[in-house]
Amino acid sequence: MAERIAEITRNTKETKIYVRLNLDGSGRSDICTGVGFFDHMLDGFARHGLFDLTVKVEGDLQVDCHHTIEDTGIVLGQAISRAAGDKKGIRRYGSRILPMDEVLVLCALDLSGRPYYSSDAEFQVERIGTMDTEMVREFFYAVSYSAAMNLHFKMLTPGNGHHMAEGMFKAFAKALDEAVSYDERITGVLSTKGTL
Image (cartoon, rainbow, N blue to C red; front, side, top):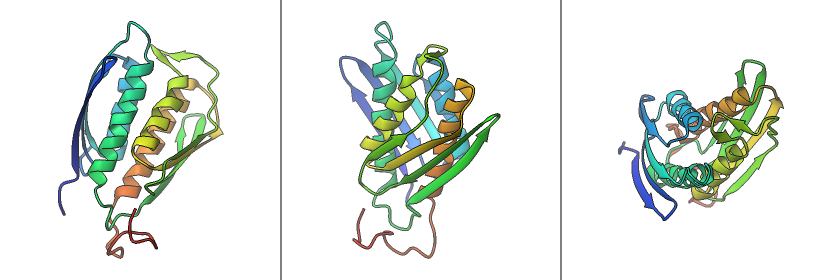
């Protein structure tokens, strides 16, 4: 099997971003976005998905965290798409119901080539550390659209905002790991169209 690694650099007037993603890693990460809680979430994503992930971001944090987090989502989505390649032999679908203390979250995704995002997660706090909680949605929306994936979250049991966000990132990691994993019974692309 060829290595499924993607490196992407994206520079704008608002952010400078470098992402390196290895879908077949061991959970190692090297992350610095300038937003501590976001770093913690990306570290959890890498660790629990068993992806090797490097993320380096210089963003306009003097404005707020929006551009930094949204643009990182765009680049991570592009990296997922590029690393997954032609998607031959992969399961395509992934899902996970994940507990995080009192919180229970469901994540389901399809690497369909058609972007869609849905989430019913509602946070009761405006901020966790220096990260606005509304940016959880913006991040996953950006990932789903730039990776052309169908991504759904259901907050089955809400609770502490930190636990909700962390549960979402970890459930996403586990669902993505399942979706990109190989199944020896799948000889081409898992689609009646013959392509994704």
